[in-house]
View 1 (cartoon, rainbow, N blue to C red):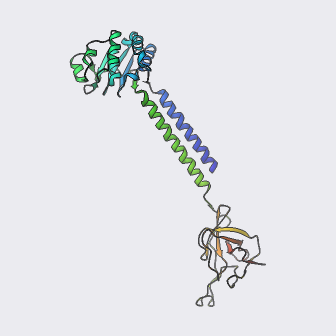
View 2: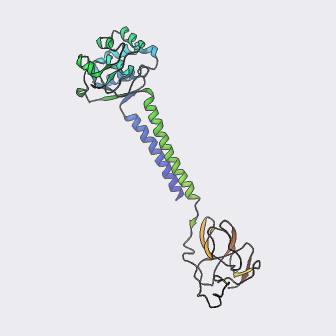
View 3: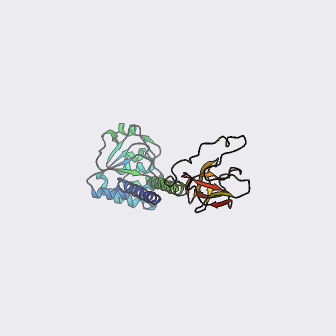
Amino acid sequence: MGRSVFVTALLLGSLASLSLAGCAASSAGCSGDGLDCLARLAGERSHVAAQVQERLQVDDLVNDRGDLKDRMTAFGPHREAVSVNIAGASGAGGTVLLILADQRYVDRESTITKLDQDAYKALGDVHACDELCERVRDKDVSGENLISAGLAKDAAGAPHGSVVDMRPADGVAGWLLAALFAALLALLALLVLLVRRSGTPRLATAAHPGPVPYPRTSAVSREPGRRTAPPGAATSRPGLPVAVPSGPMRTAIVRTELRPQGYVEIDHCLYRAAWADPDASPPAPGDPVDVVDGAGQGSDSLLAVRRGGAERRTP
């Protein structure tokens, strides 16, 4: 049982990690070095629809700002194959993509973020700074404003084929780390469950399935102040040995009160037992006792006495 749970935990953890990695690899998107990514995809396809749903910074387009001008120049031949759709706030990086793209689409309620100085200068150096570039040089502009000015088209008419999500450089990495952390937590929970199950005593019912049968009490046994001894036990005074059937004597740990019957633990298994010394107080849970099978008494439980307090007798 424990081994099967352990194997299941490992399989689930492995499958979770593989599925997360597969999702990250199969989703069409660019995260970090966005200009190079778009240029590569545009070279492989007839058309690429770049979609900006999160704020992009200029640093999300190039690994080194010093290479911004060179990356824009390399992107130039692919402008006609790229359309950009701004769905929310563009960020300065999203604005650069919109200016570089040949086909521009914006949501009417979107916000086109103003350019920073590095981006504005680089666009001018590659001769890509047009009317749209000048309009967002010093202030944010709404998508409605660009549509009205004829500088962009309504996003409702944007192409849907070969859509590429443009993501912030730390967005995918953060999501992937969080998902992997959740998978590891699930695996840890399964391993904890395995450890707890392996340490829980099992109830042994095959060897001792039923309750301890007691004979009918006699008139003598119902006298005030006198208790009935369980099968196989002899009446004795406190501190004196108790006569029990002959047989293997084992040490057990009391797990429930023996008043007069309860359960003791032997080798992580629970067994039904009866306290065999009516003149002594039953032990408390956790105390060690000696136990012997109640053979020859019609009993299917064990008889328990204090450690070293048994006197063997033949059945």
